[in-house]
Each structure stands twice: as C-alpha cells, then as structure tokens.
Length: 207
Image 1 (cartoon, one colour):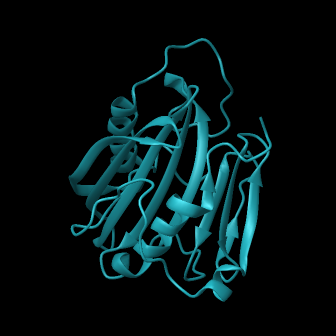
Image 2: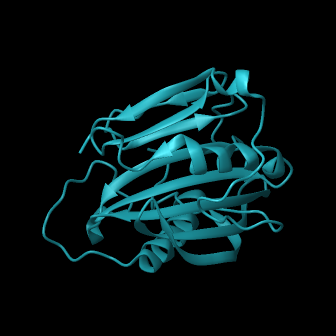
C-alpha cells in the first residue's frame, strides 16, 4: 500500500476542523449517493462505501484500499484517499506485509511522528508544517486527527494531507486524504462524507 506510516502523513484544510460524528453538508444528491460501491476488507474487518465513478486499487497484501477521485494513478501528482490498517508494533511501521508479534505498541502521537519521518525519506517531502493535531474519539475508539502541509520533489508540488488515525484494539487504522493545495477544498467534502457516513472501523455483523 502506498503509505500507512511510511507515506502516511495527512492533511487538512485551514478552514474547518473535523468534528467526528457531527452532521455536515455532503456532496451530490441522494440519487448519486446510492451509486456508491461497497468494499469490505477481509484482513482487518472494516468496510467502506465510495462513489462508483472513482478508481480504486486494492493491494494484494490486504492492508486496505486506495481511492482516486479524479481517476489518475500517477503517483507524483495524484490526489487520493486511502484507508489502511496494520498491527501496532514498532517494526511494522512502514511495512504493510508485517504480521502481529510481541513488540511494544506505539502511541498514536508516536505513529504520527514516524509517518512524518517516512514522508521525508520515501517521498522527499520538505517544508512539512503540522497544521492540526487533535485527540478525538471515533466510533468508540481512541483516535487522532492530523493535518499537514508540505512540498514534494522534484516538482515542488504543494500538498495538504489530512489523516484520521484510529486505534482499534492495537490495530492502527489510517484514513488519509492527500490532495494538491489547488484541489483540496474540492475533495474535502467527499473525505468528510466517507469518515462520517461511509466508513465502519468494524463492519456491521462481523463481531
């Protein structure tokens, strides 16, 4: 998977914070919303609905799903939303194929810090600025919202990334929106719709 803790940094608008669980205006009409696809992750038992017009990639390691609202897969300039998970062990940070073991778990703040290190090392990010870092609750679990801005090489593209980190019984979920500064406001309503209504950290009927 493209990120999670290696490439997983994440972003948000300098305008509105995310109040998990509150109501908000969502994109499209009700008829359009019914045309959303359903994805269930068998490895980590989460599920999500997303617009049928979006392109998607499901990595073979079963770590999650990548969504491309504008249909572009060109990594150096693609806006995307990603949902993924890994067991919370130190050596798993940046290793989507890792399996659970007995190493010590990390706090969400430590995981976020490591994601920034991975962003610098693997994506050549520079001028990283943390805009938001807030502890919250999400669907009954400990969570943290983070928003960052940064530049990427070699094009010097300006990115905004918003991430919701969730700790479900020491499995760490990262829900990320990465968008260029010029397209972030357009995609933010879709990300908020997914977080508030489209994603279930534990898929109904699974437990």
